[in-house]
Image (cartoon, rainbow, N blue to C red):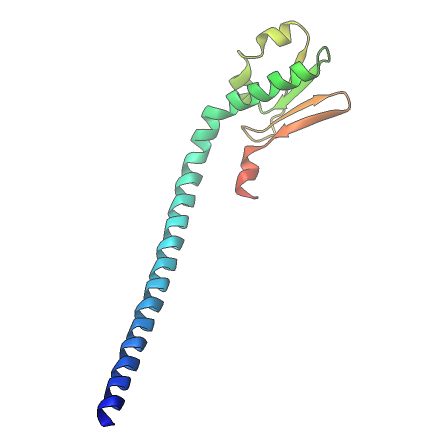
Length: 133
């Protein structure tokens, strides 16, 4: 009888030890996941301005090309920070020369943000909103 009680007590001890190991493992995993998320977020926040500077012009030019195609023969207005407009200047020269596109430099707009407007509508390209969403 005592032997059975001792075995049962050992099993309970082993089960308790396993529960503690599993709980510690879950805590460690949560800590590692949190640290990984924080590191990734910090890296992206550091890289985002550089990535935006490289990609903004191409993204805006692509959106503009689609809008010009869908809205032909309408004239569109592209409003953006002067530095943003400079990133798409070469890509939009033909449309500007043809009178299909007007550029409006807005000093108050953040770099990389652009608004494409037409009669009765428009669209906004605002990558910095990714960080607030």
